[in-house]
Length: 296
Ligand SMILES: Nc1ncnc2c1ncn2[C@@H]1O[C@H](COP(=O)(O)OS(=O)(=O)O)[C@@H](OP(=O)(O)O)[C@H]1O
Image 1: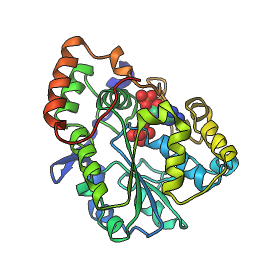
Image 2: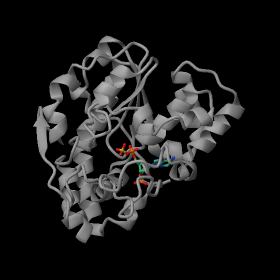
Image 3: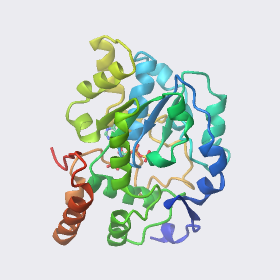
């Protein structure tokens, strides 16, 4: 509690009605005008959907399972988030991306209507990771507690309401998943569910491999599965964010690689909250054609 009380307030802003970090809004022109390349691979998803896990899977597919090469740099350097303005000395996303050799793997949490247009002009392949809203919300709550770049949450009850109304950084989970889901008609997007990755990682890794036009042996795929498992990523300093100072990510409050399960919301939601959530969910998701599993 004392640690959280000392936090410096975080400025927020809006772009086209979507709440984003103030630093992102200030740099918006350079972010929106970012120049994608035809062979970029974009990893996307609402925050806390398992995008870091996907980054490591995609990187290891490109490295043909060579875990040593996978450890060449922290995941946030290998795969920059284009809209992020991290605290110095970390380079800002768009600038880091410009210095990278092709093929680049890039990350964004932006809703589809805010994606820099050059990604579609260049017909870039995107892997969208979708996670059920209840677990996403719980994970995001803990992330707000430990990440000093985000506004500190008052309590879970308060965060619950903010999440449902889309008043959290990167906006509404509902708009995000529906927007990207519908865009699959027009663009090269592979939609992967976090719950499917937990259920059968090999099956999902294979889908990603095929989407990227690669052909790797079962042995290599097993190796990728092993090195991208929850435990391996939790222990690997290049994936567990231990390279980021405590002043930014306070992992004693909550580790970045936290729990990695389906259904943790059951340990947090009250019966009443669950009813409210389900009612709101039905209203917002009806007719979307999207089905999420909240337990396995
Ligand atoms: N390998 C592996 N297996 C299973 N789960 C994993 C893995 N790596 C990360 N995670 C979990 O993914 C959650 C973080 O999501 P993101 O990486 O999208 O977060 S971020 O928005 O980019 O900060 C966060 O979920 P929670 O544990 O529920 O908080 C991470 O623990």
